[in-house]
Length: 90
Image 1 (spheres, rainbow, N blue to C red):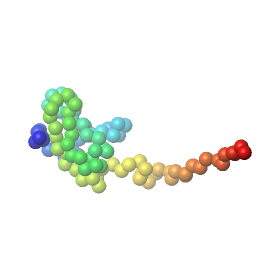
Image 2: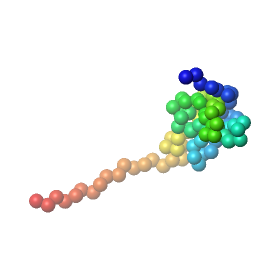
Image 3: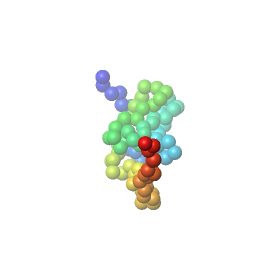
Image 4: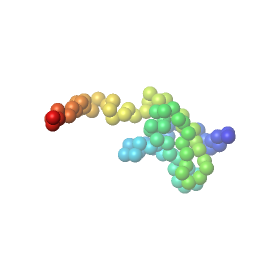
């Protein structure tokens, strides 16, 4: 099945919602095209509109995407947790 791409959009022209991890772009139907940050990191480049059949191709570089919080400089290192030893009745 051939993809029906409505347009190609630079990621800089899209709006990023960090609270939900989605990029948005207005769709002619009145809704918005959406693509998740995770999909973009997986090199997916097709954003879909949940209300109609239109799709757009997102033009971007993976290296330019927001970094995961685990890689940010201000994230504190997470210490491994260990369970205390348990007594075994004999």
